Image 1: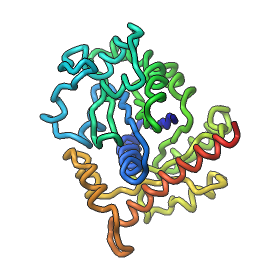
Image 2 (image 1 turned 90 degrees about the vertical axis):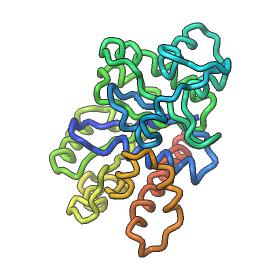
Image 3 (image 1 turned 180 degrees about the vertical axis):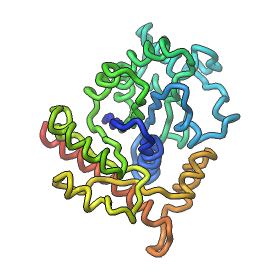
Image 4 (image 1 turned 90 degrees about the horizontal axis):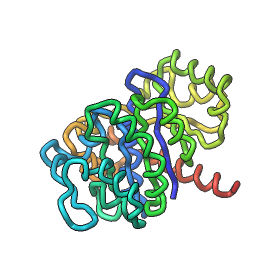
Length: 279
């Protein structure tokens, strides 16, 4: 019952997708929420590769009638066709998604099309898809593609409960956000969280310094670069990684990564509660 959208204003790699995957997966493992991850990427299976090896990813989805969904009946394309027919149910989005953790975590795969015009037509339907999914899932994490046209992206942001703006530790990117906040009222909203992706704890642009530099009241979020995690993302083994390192002692080198992911989850939950109180 909440839409959390991860976005970036930077064309260079910010670690947006992998930050979202870590945050959503840990949320599903540690909390009793039904979570959906929505990939809006175009010709990019980075998100999908975090959960499945290629041969398993390409296995068909079973649709709501119990039949194998193929071609345009599969995934987001098939879901859009069903929504257009008005023959929907509360859990219709689940029927067109792939399960990662039963009753905890599903993924709605990115569009199959390789044609950009078809992709833009699909993007027009994401707000309706998200609103439909919002009736079934407790949290929906949207990986907003930089390939999406501005208006289509804005339509998704407008219905999002929380927007996580992903940044790097480059000064130019940090200054760019300050300029955006000064010139665009969108960034003055109280439902925005800032996150440093591929975070280097040894950089002088650490959480404490960047928070102070941006004059933020609360510490911004960070998902540290972690070699084992990034390897698991390319091997379809993110869930195995998160479960393996669920409980760590303070001396374990992976402890910082897990602590920061948990802090991001706690911040999202707190922000949702804060926003709910203001309604």
